[in-house]
Image (cartoon, rainbow, N blue to C red; front, side):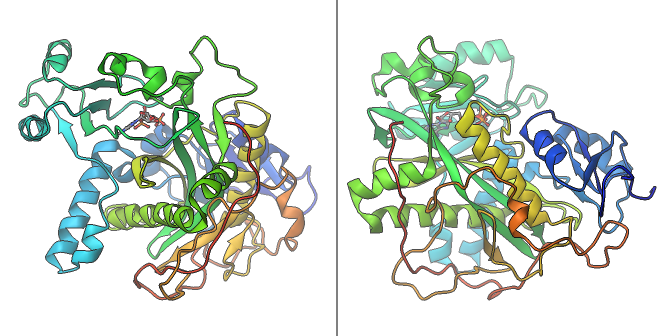
Length: 445
Ligand SMILES: Nc1ncnc2c1ncn2[C@@H]1O[C@H](COP(=O)(O)OP(=O)(O)OP(=O)(O)O)[C@@H](O)[C@H]1O
């Protein structure tokens, strides 16, 4: 490894490599003390796409203080079929260990089958609830591509022919068939799902930071359960990539609503306790999903990962995990989106702390809160719910580092290992409940 470059800037220099040209790149470029490199191995921070990590991870040997933005087999959580496989395995393991109550809390995803391999089991389940709606999703694609809804087996026979798959043909493109949540929570008659951000700085010990902000993504067309509308993606799929193709889509208005506004809206309608419980359940769903892959993910102290969680809330205020993204979109759709993502990335960099500013026992950095450090960080007694998710308005996109003490280390000077695992609170304890929270302002979706 060559020494850190940076004669052009004063003070410690951090060399970054970035394979995207979106908001991440802009934040890295604007951050004081950082200089760009195109080099594949000689960097302090590499913000890479998952393809780069797949191709390069085995070829690079990282120094102690180098940081990479993906774990090598992140797909254990971020591929739709593997996520469900790991969740099911965790539930079974808890049942075997006689932890029935905890096992029962692993019920935040709907019935899911991997096709073609589980086609037989899927058909059995399908026949048990005649008329129910299912959603078919290719496991290797994103942005709503290749997704369709169906409620009759005949509706998938044509598609089966097109995809030329049979249960014994493993090379066919894999899909999941998943029970569709038919009663989503509606606002203004429209369906939405939530995008939440979670930063994992270590899988061993599991260290999880939850971002306070996020947003709801709305469909542009009123929701209806009419079977004739099953083929209408503008009704059923809330991906921005789908919704922005609609004729009446307004780019400046977008189809998003910030999490704080949503929380406030729900609180006015259902009261603080019900909404706090919903948001707390979302926080628990996040930690449980991470615990389910903790043993499968290759822990590498150089790696961290910013996950984008997609959660759907139903009419009974129950959250359902749809999927976890390893590369949540960090491109900005409009000014509000830009503000959120700029601040988010800046806060990620503050937690990852290449500058060596943190003491190591922080519970909160920017809008990130440490929610799990080998156990829940909030061990207050049961009796209420507690999550800071969606409690504060996003801060202005300012230089978040201004509030932090000056850097203590540089790449060359660094002595501490950067596992990012600050003080551990109650290893392996059950998730506690306590406290309350609400949002602050309301605007139209
Ligand atoms: N089980 C479900 N019940 C109801 N709606 C669902 C379900 N699964 C997915 N959806 C809807 O379909 C959309 C796309 O699903 P999903 O996020 O799983 O696919 P994707 O193409 O990988 O999207 P992304 O680009 O966000 O990764 C969701 O945003 C949601 O609106």
